[in-house]
Length: 175
Image (tube, rainbow, N blue to C red):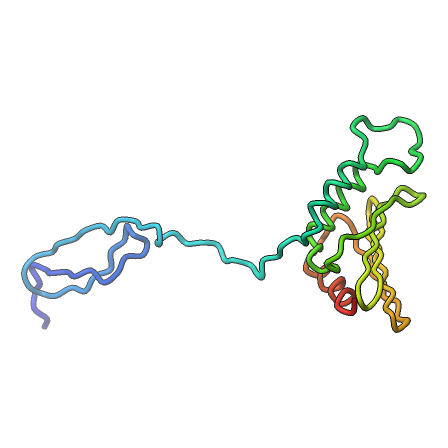
């Protein structure tokens, strides 16, 4: 038969969360309890997803150029190609913000197609890459110097940016 414990002496081992005390109990004298105060290091952070991407150095210039290509007052008549549709500009900015770190370092040459799409042409040491941004898709074509042509189509808005990045990385790694 075990002895009856009438008083306890507790020493705190750790607290998790801070309001709950875990202790080792010894049969002896008395119980002393203290609630641990919360520290900044007790806050659980969300996992960091990485690696963190940084936009290409040319992205702010491209961003400004695209924004400057959208009319302040939308044109009510047919567009003659001198202005970029706001929805295409928005899609292009989202696309290049998410992927600019994959493209060649040099700023792309941009213009609008006859259909009103944004075209961005990049030139690398190993070839050229053309992205055609429309309202619902981005079509990318890489012409590698060895004669190889690579193509991919990305639906907009993005469903899974990691797959888009993998496809583009395959293309741009040869540039």
